[in-house]
Length: 198
Image (cartoon, rainbow, N blue to C red; front, side):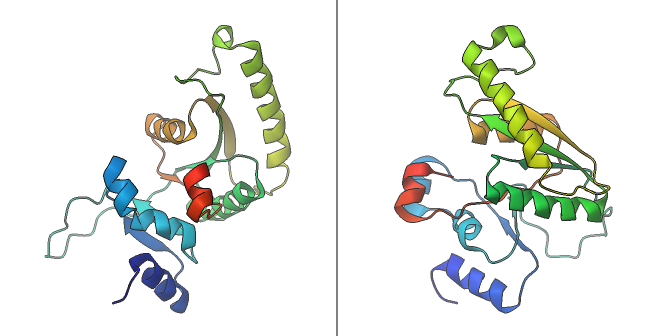
């Protein structure tokens, strides 16, 4: 009971305290999302614990008990990074998570250079001088970034793409068949969130 819904959920998660919050999302877009907002998005900004957002749970489950399925397997984890302290904390969490499942981590950095279409970073002939310089700088930043954490026995690799971050992260995760995306949030709200986005 109570409102706003996201605030009630966050309060309960803090009170329990919850180790993980699992929420579905309708993934509304356009004018409907602008006016109604998204409970999942608000939870991402305010939740006191890690949050798993499930886009595959649109179908209602039957009321009868389902037979036991296969054990949860997580082999491939995608961790988008922008080299900020916030994404460093997300990577540290992902390493702990990967250790529990013996999973491999791929760190993905998306270079948003304002191009309207994605560009393959492996096709050097398609890259402008500016894009090559930006990619070289990103690779150097990634080398420094990975030195800030201890991976231990966790296997990892790095990847770079050029394009709009949201679309590129989603497309990369789908194309490479990742089991989960672990990312941190700056928790921007209000006017800053409207201007900067997430």
